[in-house]
Length: 600
Image 1 (cartoon, rainbow, N blue to C red):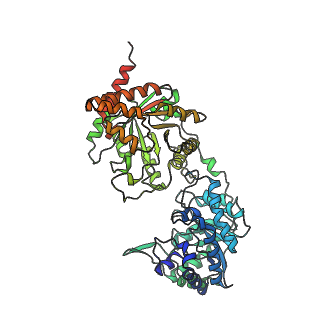
Image 2: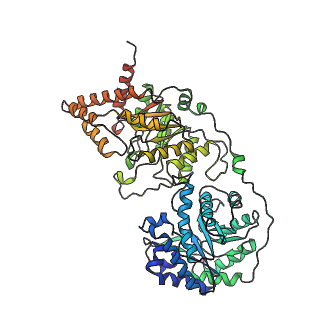
Image 3: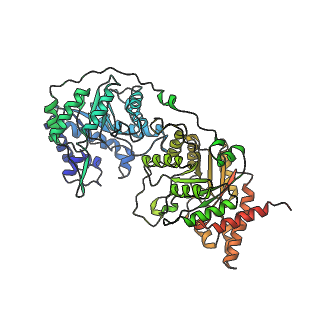
């Protein structure tokens, strides 16, 4: 549908689902072309017709209408010669455990789309292009809550036979066998050859009918377009092979034109699929392969201090803008000599490009011998990239990680840069927790488990504090073992947050920020979300600044020291942050804390 609409001059930035309302004739023409080619099932133009995706076009309120009208259009084009299946694709967001959207909320989103399709009078449903099996099962439950019509449930797998989450075909089948789906299959992602391999494996695992909708080959860039190069003849030949391998429903996904469908129809008209023996796949296979993580005290020095209740002191270091590592190493060496327990290495703060956090942490561990806490943001990487980074960091000996969703690029000097946010901090905490149990996101074993001490950020000054506390609870549930606060200037605010979250009893490090100037204080107060600088602190900095920059720095250190003394009874440690990663300021503050606690 997308290929055909694009070929008819519909730009890719248009909401294709809205065309059901705005350009119904062009959608009807596409459907009719496939019916004339011999299609026996056509899908409604509703792949993105859920309220989450429609909301990006301001159309979420019309979810039911768009889906209902889509069925009417497809029925008119089919004219009794083909069945109409309601197409449902992923929501376009991550659901738990990989994202903040709960399963019940996700089911409600799918439910609105299902309602419109049912009202339109579909003959069944095709749930397609799912990588997250849990999201697929959520969509199945949404359908079954309103309809007992047939369901074709399709995931998308790569050439390795796994989803992008690493879920194997065996685990896909085990999950779907527990739900009332009528057909199990694959679509999209790969061409016919790789699809054949997947169908051959699937046929050995299920006694339910199998579907296969490969792309028309893999796309190739031709000018500014992506062209699918598999010919109709090639698709027809592979359709025959797919049926011989066990498929009972065959067709095509991206790039499959009516010419492809006509050839497929001609090739497979007289074929019948083979029947294969079914091998039982136990639903508890994932649990059986999990192992217990190493005790917290054995994973790192930081983990040992947290486990035994010793006070922790860490200092943030910001990686350099260039590739030269000598200054970073020199700063790390000075902090080690000052006796810090770990150096917290920041990951592209405020959306600015710097040396990668992983190599920076590795350099400090190798060249200085200081333990690091690797800040890791979800902004710049998809889940596959994150998984690669995490396995590489574990191999490099990095043991402590602070997981952060990340500032959007628009906050930095690259406003046109794109953010990924494939999963957020909650989802990544789940990923790392599973790695510590020896499992990847798809439930497959990785061999020796990782040994990460898992930290998360908390924002005690969030505007929507209820939402922040809810997210913090999800992070703890996902596997967080310590937390780091935003810079603290308002101690009662932090006390209130801890009072409301005391049921989780997670060790926390308080963010301490020695102010360096009035400008620095005003910047934090007015331009950094989540940081609350009380008016009395601004007044103190304003008065000090009137006596010069040295006086302002001294007052900023005095304020930080007062906060430090007040939060010590509340927390398990501190993370000292300074503007622009100025180590001198951090060292001065460390000297001040040592002096304040020295015996008299």
